[in-house]
Image 1: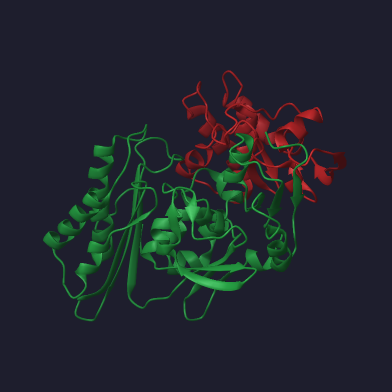
Image 2: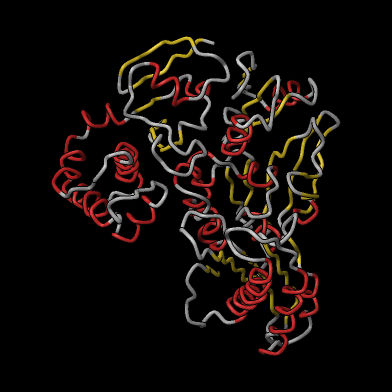
Length: 149
Length: 296
């Protein structure tokens, strides 16, 4: 099927198999910042924004983005340089595997609840698993980003 | 993986969606796709066609009547329910339950209708909808019907819905003086399924005498469980002894299984404990707050 949507602010038109998952469509377009790890919507590595809301692209049918506005970590890094800056300054990463998902989740939070408290930040990011940092520096990164906006 | 020749349809009207569903049992309805996506990906569902309901305006409506009744369209998302001012004001325990499902990615797309039709007893919404005595509106080619939510689930992933029927709306009645509570007990991570969940509602007359009491449990059976013993509180001004007796009945009614969220024995004990906590939260608005429990 043919899909028309905006991807990181640019109009795209692509042919996709009807049963294709969004994560595969995005990666096939060369945007490999979005990753599939658990494959069951739990770990958060595949997080992208669809119409400003975070979704697990590993479970989301690509067919559902026809007409939608999709942002991946690549586009958000350009759109929200302060977000990347905050993660860098507060060392919100260690091995880096979860980082794209953490960043996209944080961008979603900034829109949903820009004045989020530390507890709310932690609750929001709880759907994005990190096995390195213990989450302290991730929470600090997101807090700094929200404060600086 | 989903088959390459899968047909995907996003009808704009309920009539079109029902027409497409009438095409046979290998046609499935999808709300947010959080469950359908998972089942498709693991070849547990192999439909010929998916009918996506999220583009049907009348199913997207969340409406509060002046009388206080809340009507939730089938594809209102859990995020929308959790953030709804009307839901938060009139049914805070329901809004809380919606806001605690999974993670933000799930709540952004998962729907009220899906939360019922998927029929997994660990889901957060059913117990509080049971306690609030919601009505499920269903539509099929033969017309519309209504089912009390406590009669909707018939087994694990099984409901009263026929293959060609859809949940169109869930209606929560306004009951004067009713106080309800929902609690989800998750000893693991915040975004996990509850090990046990419990919901209750209580209505009292001017003398403090109970006129209606409902108690429901999640995660401890093939379906959400209604605990009939709670209705025995009607006519009483209950004290700790009466609450404990209903909690004991809840523990006895629970039929959990062992898994990584707890042993069956542990879950049974927790069903009793959390049943007592939600009942106390309904009875005593001044009680100290309990983590993971919201009443109002």
